[in-house]
Amino acid sequence: MKQHRLPAFVLTGLLAVTSSTLLAQNQLPAGTSAPDDDTAAQPSPQAQQQTAAEEALQNQNYAAAQKLLTELVAKNPTGARLLYDLGFAEDALNNTTAAESAYQRSIAADPRLFEPHLQLGLLLARTGNTKAAREQLEAATQLTPLLGNEAAKGQALRALARLDQQSDPAAARDALLAALKYSPETPQDILLAAELAEHAGDNAAAEAAYRHLIAGSPADMAAISALAHLLIKEQKYSDAETLLNTALAAHADDPTLNAQLASVYGAEGKAEQAVPLLEKLHTANPQDANITRMLADLYTQTGQAARANPLYDALLEHGTPDAGLLASRGDNLIRQQRYPEAEAILKQATQQQPDLADAWSSLAFAASENHDPSTTLQALSMRAKYLPDTPATLFLSATAYDTLHQYKPAAEYYRKFLAAAGGKFPDQEWQARHRLIALDRMR
Image (cartoon, helix red, strand yellow):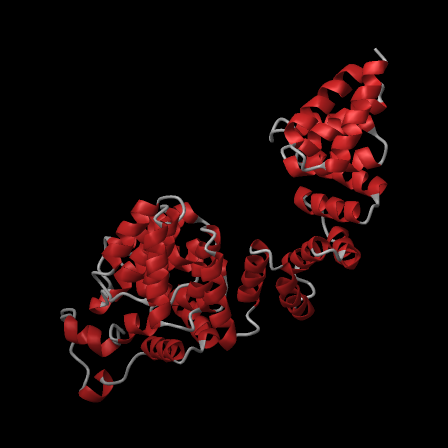
């Protein structure tokens, strides 16, 4: 969760402590006298070093600032603002551990400082330490930023809203509303509000917020993609298609939008229109496993199963394949009538994820074509735990029992199949009727 940091020089630039400042604020010890004006006007070497550090921060020369501030902190290890500036420089240089340490030391030196609580909270959120991040951000919201920078408190509240977005949407909404008291609404606020509404199941409010954001920022790809995702989820495919085509007219190579449009075409039964989109994406992103998988599946669905072979092979060669990928490859092999290979890989898929009902269906079919009736019946028995029987599964059960010479259950399933088929499977219905006649003669 990378957030905009407060410029560190704002915190120290007006608060630099020079020797002349100290003289102006404090009475001299008894028995001493003030130096003449020329001497008082000369800043101390430490003050000069601090000024140089502030200038380096202002000019975003973080390496120089880090070097200077490290030396200053060594001389003043409890200087809260120096420690904060050092943390800021380390943070900007992506020295996460050093930055976290400096922020924590700054807080220990002066717990009332708002800025180190905020920046430490943001850093911890980026590194995934959500609990600790929330503690620091909540502490920041109870403090006052330096120099009246109230917008920074809004930043802390927005960060809290992001942290709570998934786990506590109501708290996230409250934090976002509180943030608007300190700074005006931003496009990111609208996007977050839409996401919170969607998470809460208020799709109408989410859609309205996404469209409001897009109306004001037509080139906001995150908002367009989020709205497309919502429309696809709601099966508003025509609306999603229009939205995505409009966006792609201006951003033809955006991979996310192209992938979403391909999925819309697939849901609409326009697989042929999806193929060139995914081919273009795959050419541009050959190492993207998600795109490769989508294209392989699409080739299978559009009767180009052999073209998917090298894609599936590449996916299976890299890492441990998930059950879904194994099941997809199994279906692809079935379409190529490579039944022994299909049966083997579908067994792997179902062993890896036993509740993958469609994979059990495919395994039953592959085993049947591979003349393995025992596996067919086992697969159908597992499938029945998750899905009701269909005419196809009833027919597979009947023929498997028939092959095993278990004629009584075979006749039972042939009758169930005929009752469910309703004339939609003429070849199989003819076979079932003739087998029932033969089985009756065998009694």
